[in-house]
Image (cartoon, rainbow, N blue to C red; front, side, top):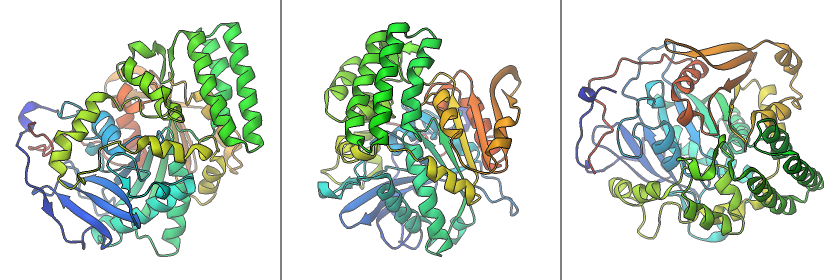
Length: 469
C-alpha cells in the first residue's frame, strides 16, 4: 500500500457500543471512533468468555446483488490465537511491526477473528473445568458466539459468511459447519453460511502421520532407516486410533515427531526445505525447547503456534492490550493456552472426515487448499483423506484435470485447482503450512475466487488501521 494512502494516529479512545449492534449477551463491546474496528467478549457459557475482533473493510464494494462477504478466521493449535497469529502474522490489516500489510484479506472481505476455544489468546475461563474437551464442544461455543454476533445486526445478516480455517482449526470448522447449519435451519442463527475453506487442515491425523515417512523420504529428508522407523510407528498410531486409544496414540505421536526430527537433522514440519533453526516463522530455539518439554504441549507447537513468537506475545500483552482496554487485569494473552491443549488431548487424533462428508451432502460449499512444502498436514495426507469421502461427486471430482494458477502478471505456475459441484481443491506451490504467509499473492487470488469477491486493488484514500506505538 502506498505510503500516501496511510496515516498514523495515536491510540483513539475506545468507545462502548450498545448491545443492539452485536447481541444482547455480549459482556463487553468496544471499538474505534471511526467504526473501522469492533471487539469484545461474549460469555458463551457462564464464566467462559470468548474474545473477538472485527474489521470493516475500507475497500468494500457496494453491490446489492452481491453483498460484501465476511470471513471468519479459525486458528489451529489447539490453543493458537486467531486474534494474534491470524491477524498480525497472516491476513489482518497490520503486520507484527504494525505496518500495513499489502496482502491483507480486507481487500476482498470484512474480517472476523476469534480467540477459540475459550482459554485461547485473550479468551478465558474462570474455572479450569469449563475448558472444552471435544471439537463438538468447540463448535457449540462458536455457534453461541455467532448467534450473539449476527442475530441483532440485520446489515451483517445480509453478508455471506465464509469460514476459513488453518491446521487444527480445520477440525473446528468442520464441526462448526454442522452446528451452524443446524442452528440456521432451526432459526436460531441468522446468517448465510456461504462456504467453508480448510487450509492445511488436520482433518484426518491418521492419514497425515502415515504420509510423513514416505513424503520425507521422497524429498531426501529421511533415509531408508528413518523411513522404516517412521512407518513402523505410524502404523502403531493408526492401530491405537482405530482401537479408540486416542490418548495413547497422542503420546506415541509425540515420540514420532522426535524420531523424525532426529533422523532428518531437525526438519521443519511446516516447510521441508527448512530446518527448525533456519525457519524465521518458527519459535526461537529456547522457546521451542520450553514448549516441547511441557507434557501435552508438543502438538500445539506442531499445529499452529509456531508463529506465536516472543515478539508477538510482547505485542499482544503490551501495545495491543493497551489499545483494546477491556482485557481483564488477571488475563494475559495466551496465558491459558497450554490448558486448552491438555483439555483437548483426547480429541487431538480423532478424524473429522465424516463431518466434511455431511457438509458436502448438505450442499455447503467446501474448499480444501494445501501448501506444497508442508509436512505436518502434507498434501499427500490431504489427498488420502479426501479419497475416503463418500460424497456422491467424488469419483467425477478425482477424474477431473487440474487448472493451473497464476498471480497478477507473473507467468510462473503458482498452483493448481480443480472444482466440481460444491468441492474445490487448491494445490499451492512454494508454500508451507502457512499459505497466506508463504504465497500471499496467490492466496489472495484464491480467496477472491472462493468468495466471489472483486479483488479491490484500488486503495482508498485512507487506511484506518495504522497507528503509532
